[in-house]
Image (cartoon, rainbow, N blue to C red; front, side, top):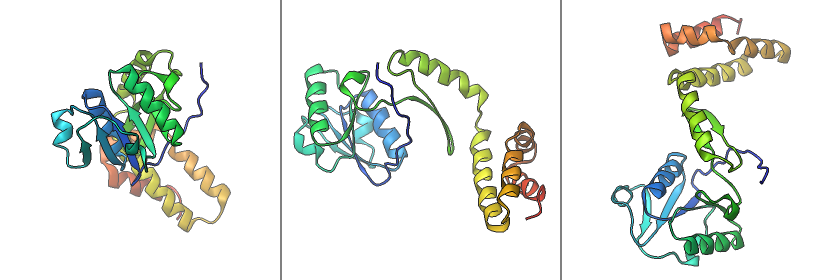
Length: 207
């Protein structure tokens, strides 16, 4: 079993190729679009929702190795083993990052189960041993990390920038940042809202 190196990949304005046109391909394409990628989908038959998405370039035909030109990431999501193997081999030859859905042996990266709350990303992976376990853990975490975490993380980022601008002492900054990682601030957010939380955080230190 491979031991993976976990990263967060910036795909903004990068060409990402999805080979396959079904429901799985649609979900993969949507996730890439949401991350800011320029997405190209290639398949003889393409899901109607994919064809209707004007954020995606659709090439409704069989895969050609020329589709790989300029591709940064390649996702292979077909139900044809020969196609999967062919695209994966060609993509590796082109130096692309390639993931064949549910087949880590043909991939040079895997996509973990992911929980997103704004800028907060929680990823769960089992090295390909049990994707279903990864999904179950993600579902359990959804109740632990509610939608309010999107606002909480956004405020933390705003406060962090202001403190770096106004507080020169690095030890004082570090002490302050550590004080923000506390459930009482989440409770304050739930009761008073995002703007009030930011004011209260900044008022807790002389800035």
